Image 1 (cartoon, rainbow, N blue to C red):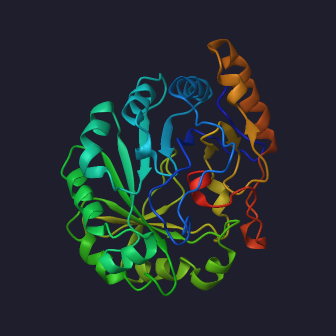
Image 2 (image 1 turned 180 degrees about the vertical axis):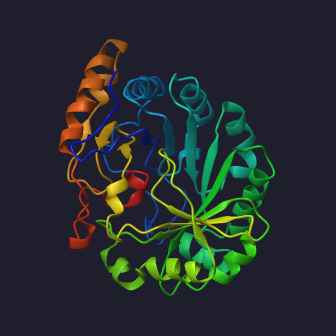
Length: 327
C-alpha cells in the first residue's frame, strides 16, 4: 500500500500517539493547576483499539512510533502497549516521552517489552528550579532514573528542556558540564504558545536561535537528519560525549521537514500540533474489517495538511495545552 504523502511532497513515517491526557506534574508552561478531567470526557483508547490503529498506520508507512501523554507511564497497561507496538510488522522504533517520575521503578519493564528510545523531560539540573517549573520537588529522583537508563542497553536516550526566559535560560554552562561525559542528547525546546498559556508565553518566551548561534560559535557541528527523526536540529562536538538538539518552531522553514502525524488519546487524527480540527478515527478501530477504510481515510485527510502552522500569527488551533495532545 502506498506510503502517506501530502500535497507539499512530505512523507510521514512517524506517529506520535497520546495514551492519555492526565499528568502527575504541574509544569508552569503546560498544566500549572494540574490535570482536571472535564465532565463527560470519553475513555482513552483501549489496548485493542491502539493495536488496530498501529496496524493501519504501519500499512501506509509508519516506521517510528512515539508514545506520549499527558504522562504515558500512568497507563497500567503501558508495557503491554509497547509490546504490541514492537510486534506490529513495519514498526522499527518504539519511543516514549515521559516526565521520568516512574523511571527507576518501571524502566526495566518498558525495556523488556521492547522500548527502543526514551525522551525524559528535565527542564533544569537545579533542584529548586526544577521544583519551581514542574511543581514537583523530584528533580533528584528523575535524574537518578536517567542514570539508570543511561547505564542500560537502551539504544537512544534524550532529555527535553523547555527554554524559559528568566527561569532556566542561563543554564547552558551547567548542561555542557553534564554532557561532557554522558552519551545522550539534550534538546532545548523553544516555548510554544498554546490556548491556555498566552500571558506566560509573553513573559517567558525566548528565541532558540541565540542559543544555536552560541553553540556554533563554540565549535558545535550540525549533524545530518535521519528520515524518521523528530524536529530537532542536532549538534555534536568532539570534546563532548553528549549531543545538543535545538527545536525552534518559530524559525523560518521549520515545517518544511515535517514527517509526523498525531493521534489524541481519544482517537482523533491531528494533521498538525496546532491544527484547527481533528478527524475522529475511533469509529474505524472497532474491528479489523475497518482497516482498509482507516488507511483510505488517512490518505484522504493528508490532502488537507497545510504547509505550516500559524504560531507566528498567534493561532494555536485546538491545542489548549501540550498535555492534551502530547507535544
